[in-house]
Image 1 (tube, rainbow, N blue to C red):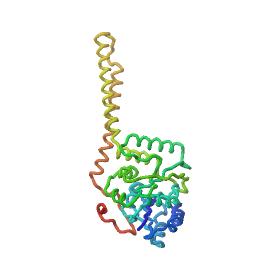
Image 2 (spheres, one colour):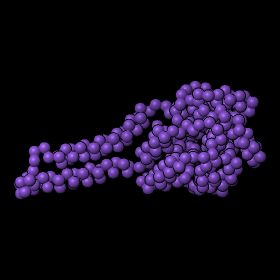
Image 3 (cartoon, helix red, strand yellow):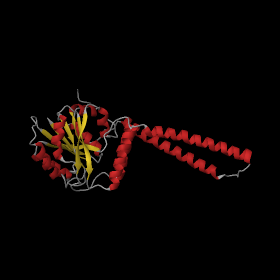
Image 4 (tube, helix red, strand yellow):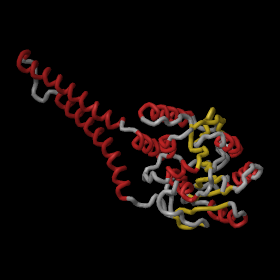
Length: 318
């Protein structure tokens, strides 16, 4: 198989047929000696997405589907697609048609120039609120500053990767996936193509602000220990301030004789120190929770139904 296209699906019944049509219009004219495959991963959709995917697979042998037992999340859906893909190159694209399938031809051509990763970098983002654009811009630039991995800014999951990158990703079984960071961490030769991101074609986005916050925490805790360092620095800072306040209190008591029982600053100090301690404990707890999830070694996803065979356990041989 020359090319695999992975499409995570969550309540995308309004977009599936148009996406399928546009994908075929792009992929069929391409020179692919061994053909291509489309892998749709149904991530617990509650609409008619699954019956539509089954109908596509029944009439087109190049179309395959995976149906999760419940909603496991976008990054896990992409991971399942990578696990089951057979292509020498793999494209990751969302089903909302904000990322144009027509760019796949250029991504594939760029990959053929000796690169292992070609990601699509957004010049503009249409149809999204100012708040979402601002939070995304701040997050990606903050992540770039605090991580030790060069994660490209203004990019999503829309990209093409080589088979050896897929093999490496299969050796990274973290429970809290952040594939953009993992692909950057892998290394190899990487480059980008710029494009203008369109407005969502139909339906509602599955990325609520709560999910975006969880996704941001996964990215930060997976690739940076800056929050732990910040908690340590905060502890030293507060300890220093508390020490100075203690000296001031002793001076007022012994030299100025200017004090009152139950001084308000005592309560301020207790609340301030307690708040810093809770922040530090919360940061540490986030890391411990992720370590605990990985130690349990539960499967990343459960497939209820599929027309694909299960992949061989463990990483692919190099």
